[in-house]
Length: 352
Image 1 (tube, rainbow, N blue to C red):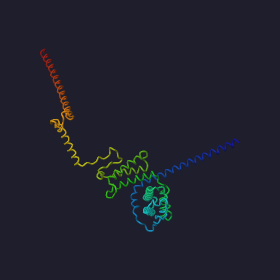
Image 2: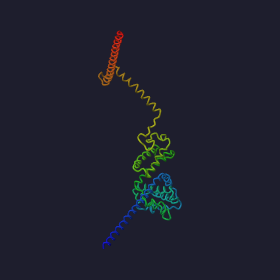
Image 3: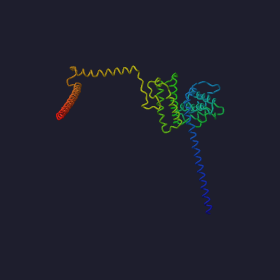
Image 4: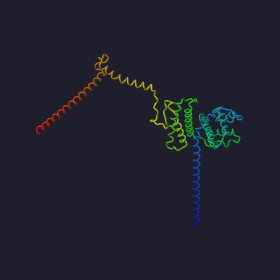
């Protein structure tokens, strides 16, 4: 009986150990999968530098033959959606459908440019939907676009973004990076028209960099910080920054108070400033002398100005008298010492 009881306890122990090992392995695999997914997504930050080019392609509203836009009509499968109806214009719907069709035509899952296409379309939709309070429907709409343009339901196109929604924090980070890249583009291409001045682009870029740099103080190994470092290097390599803008707030990134640029002052204004300063320095003593010497009809005898000037002059006179007394005393002491020396010398001479 004891043997049976012992065998039961041993069997339970073995089962518990196996369950524990299975749980540990399961948790380990989950951690590996989690970190893999995180690294896969956060590497997408590197794709933001391509966003401007993809935005140009999306905004080019060229039609494609055999592409059916009826889905964007108010009665279509997209336009009639109760969550989207009235909050996403027919024109923007057509742009999204057209861009999805272009992605499908050139898609290569191993190509960074294709990945950037997928990422930008999702970002653009999220931004548009967010402004209308329907960002929670971005993922389903994104999937529907590829189902429309692809004969096999688009199962193999941009899969990652169909299954992994962008969080609000990541969206903000991507927006900041995109805006900095946009500013750098306008700075490096002065002939490209922009709604902002070049000075605004420079100062906005440096200001956004400084704000986002704080996120990297505790974790500077993230992909976001790596991209931020690339932006810093591109900014610091801009030639003749002060020729582009004469009130740049930050010449080099990272910007510190002692690194800020002193504003350029033309030589003419510098020479004018020095001339004015010299004239003022010469006028003040002369003016004080005139005020003191003139029989002041406009100044009462006991006025504050007159009393103050007399006080200063009297103080100078007292100092001069003290200097004279000290000097006379020193002369007297020297004479006295010399006379004693002469007497002693004379006495020695007589004894000899």
